[in-house]
Amino acid sequence: MASQEEIAAKMKELHEQYTVKLRGELQSLSDLVSDVPSDFSKLLDTLHQRLHKLAGSAGTFGFAELSEKARQLEIQVKLWLDNPPANIPHEWETFAHEIGQLPSTLSPSQNGKEQDSPVNHSSTEELLAAPQHHQVRVYVVNGDARLAEEMAFTLRHFGHQTSWFTSLAQSTQAQADGRPHAMIIDTDLLQEEGTDPLMSLGTVPLIFTSHCQDFDTRIQVARAGGQGFFLHPVDIPKLVDRLSQLLRSNGDTPYRVLIVDDDRDLAQHFQLVLQGAGMEVQVLEEPSRILDAVKEQRPEIILMDLYMPGYSGVELARLLRLQDDWLHTPIVYVSGETDLKKQMSALGHAGDDFITKPLSDEQLIAAVKVRVSRARMLSELMSRDSLTGLFNHSRIKEQLVLEVSRAQRNDAPLSAVMLDMDKFKHVNDTYGHGVGDRVIKTLAHLLQQRVRQSDTVGRYGGEEFAAILPDCDAASAWSIVDDIRQRFGQVTFFSEGKEFHVTLSAGIASSTDYDNAEAMLMAADEALYLAKASGRNQVCLAGQKPEESS
Ligand code: GH3
Ligand code: MG
Image 1 (cartoon, helix red, strand yellow):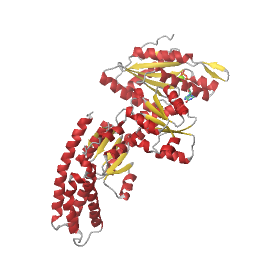
Image 2 (cartoon, helix red, strand yellow):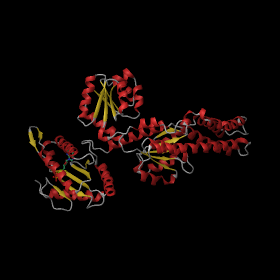
Image 3 (cartoon, helix red, strand yellow):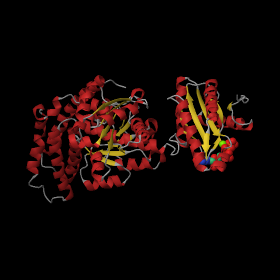
Image 4 (cartoon, protein in one colour):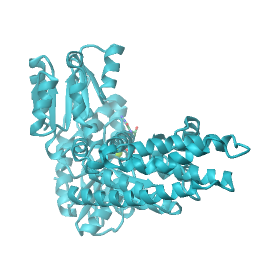
C-alpha cells in the first residue's frame, strides 16, 4: 500500500491537473454562452450536464464558492428545461455574464482550502485508529473511581490493556500517548461534560454504562455515537463479547471500497483520500466491467455515481442485486443530485443511501467507515452460531476456501478437522436437551481455548464441529486434536445429582494430500467415520489406519 507521503504527492499532482482542466472548462463554458444560441434547448441540455458535474467536483477539490455558484446556475438551467421559454429569456444576459465570472472564484484568496495540502493529514489520521489485535487498549471512564478501577482490573483478565479515568477530559488528555481502541464511558459523565470531549475521538468505538435505562439516557447514548449500552452491575462477559465484536468489525483488515464514477479526476481524488485513511480502493471507469470488478475485489461498499454515459448508477445497482453474492453489499450513490424526489426514487431501486457531492474528505472517510463497520458487524453476527458463538456451517466452509488458497500461495501446510461427539443422542435422551446444550457449549469453549489465535473453529452441525489449523501438518494436528479429545473426555458433567462423561471422535485431512477445500472436508469426514467405526473416542488421519486412543 502507498505511504502517506506518496498519497499526498499524488493528491497534489491530481489537484494541479484538475485546476488546469478547470480553467479550460470555465473558458469553454464562457465561450458556449457568449453568442445568442441557435438551438436553445440543446444548449440547455449541455449546460445542465456540465454545470452539474462542475458543482459536484469543484467543491470536492476545495473550490467551494465555484461549486456553489455552479449549483445555482444549474438550478436556473433546470427551470428553463422544465418550462421551456418561447424565446431567449431576458435573464439570459445576466446568466451568461455570471458564467463568464466563474473563473474569478479560482483565486486562492477566495478559496481557503486550496492553500492547504489537499489531503487533510490530521483528520485522516484521527479517523484511522485501526486496532491492533495483539494489544487492545481500552479506556474505562467513570466518575466513581472505585467502579472505574474495578472494571479496568476485570477487563485485564480478558487480555485487554486498560487504563481508567474519572472524567472525559482526563481521558482525552491521556490520548496524547496513544489512542485507545475502544472506550467504556459512564453516562453520568455525558451529563456533566457533554459530548464535546468525544469529538476528537474520530471513530473509536464507544460503549456506555449507566445506572438508568430510561429513554432520555438511551437517546443521549445514541447521540454520542454509542455502539453498546450496559446497565450496572455490568455483565462483564457480555461486555467483552461486545468489545470483541466491535474490534473485529473495526479490525485491522483494510476496508475494501469500489468507486464507480466516470469523472476520472473526482474518482481519483476519492480514491486517494480513502487510501490515505488506510483503505483498499479500486476505481471502475468502465461500468460494463462491474461484475468482474466486484468478483475480483469483493468490495465491502460501492460508491456509485448516479449519472454516467450509457448506464445509470441505479441500473448498475439493480444489476448487482440480481446476484445473491452482492445482495448485502452497501451501495451508496455519490451524486450531485439534490432533488429529494430523485434521491428517493434512486433509493427505491436497489441503492442503500445517498451522499451528495461536493463532500469534504472527512465526510467521505466517515461515511465509508460508518457503513463498512456496520456491514462487517452484521455479517459477523450472521456468520455466528447463536448457541456457541462459533462460526456457523457456511462461514466455516468459506473460511476453509480462503485458508486453502492462502496455504497454497504460501506453500504452507494446513489441516482441516471434523469432530463429533459420541453417542450424543444418549446424552439428550438421558439428561434432557438443556443439558445436551450445555455439553455442546463446553466443547465449543474448550476448542476455542485449546487452538491458536490464527485457527478457526466452527459449529458444523448439531454436535459436530469443524476446525481449520493453518501452518499445521497432519501429525501436529493429530497431537493437538488428540489432546483436546483427552481433555474433553475428562470433563465431568452433572445433572440432577448424577455425574457423566462424554467423548468425541475426530477426523483430520491435510492440504498436502488434498488440493481443495471440498476434498479436504470430505476426507476429514471419512476419517471421522473411520474413527466412529473403529470404536469411537479416537482421532483418525485421512487415508490412514486409526491410531489407538490412549
Ligand atoms: P455417534 O457417536 O454415532 O455420533 O452418535 P450420536 O448419538 O452422537 O449421533 P446422532 O447423529 O445419532 O445424534 C446426534 C444427536 O445430537 C441427535 C440430536 O438430537 C442431537 N442434537 C443436534 N443438535 C443439537 C443441539 O443443538 N442441542 C442438543 N441438545 N442436541 C442436539
Ligand atoms: Mg455424534
